[in-house]
Image 1: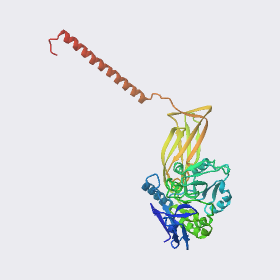
Image 2 (image 1 turned 90 degrees about the vertical axis):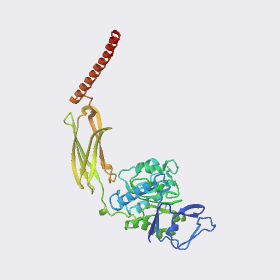
Image 3 (image 1 turned 120 degrees about the vertical axis):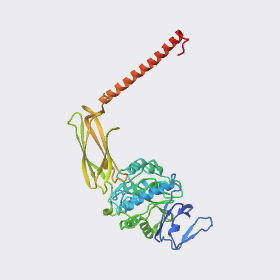
Image 4 (image 1 turned 135 degrees about the horizontal axis):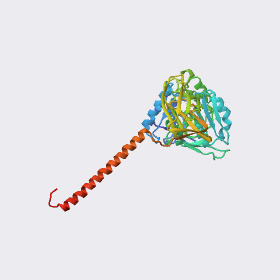
Length: 441
């Protein structure tokens, strides 16, 4: 046996270090060490003998999630399956390292560590910039990242940022990961209690199970400290699974680790996942390559759009052209893998094209494609039209409109005539009754 994945409520062993009590999965990973509960209170307080782990473990614990547990598990296994088969992925070369004030001394360590798996490492570590607002803006990046490497203070349900070592940079709560839905697969949290799976909506759980791309998070069930993960990423670069790489890292680092980190470090998600090799990757990747506008004909606007399918799949998609909130064009299309096409659209009735100095319009052209799209940044193009305004034409009478009005007018006349006849009939009848009351009618 090399490892075990715990799905559901597998019991937690509890361990105490210097008055701190926390759940530890090292109890399951160390197969030949000795665990002692000296005061017999149900909490282990001593771990001796050969304490290095023989196997890895991970947890898919969702009972503390404020959501439908079974549905979230099914959603997770679905995207896990897609990732395994190369049908969904994010830029494997990109990593976001977001390092708050107390971690600035680890910037070079982080860069060297992450260079094992990434060629584009985006490091944010300026004490005046690392704030909750800026961090959330990075989470919204539409290209996405393979890894998030986060160093920030916090607890199981939030992390907080400092500005010049003062806790004034704002707070990010776990529920915001679901709201933002970041395009990130893997998380390494240097945040206290990020993986404390016994708590409601803990951070690692929200990142992995409440987002569309989350697959795995590594964090601690109690205090977390700045430590080197270079060996872990080296082993990933060699093709090891996350579980095997972390177990190898434990073997290499255990003597240097704080006892809380050693016993509290936990994997949330599928630890058998492996990094991609580039030639194994298949992606969905539509893009708008170029847009040209022809407005020489004063009454209309010709828009030419070059769309490329850079991916490996035949794409069925929708192209939408808007002028502010008005939807001018909506068309469904199909494009084969590694091909391109030029789409021509004309903007005319019921819209008017007005040419006048000082006016302008903004066109938004978007490709509505599969949710597995590799890069959303090139699926939208905005074009500013100077001295051109696009407005809706005022209602005019068409032949169909005229016919409708004639019919309605005729019905109104007939209805009035019928009502008059009925009224007249009743009136005459009363006159006859008075004059000839003895005659039965």
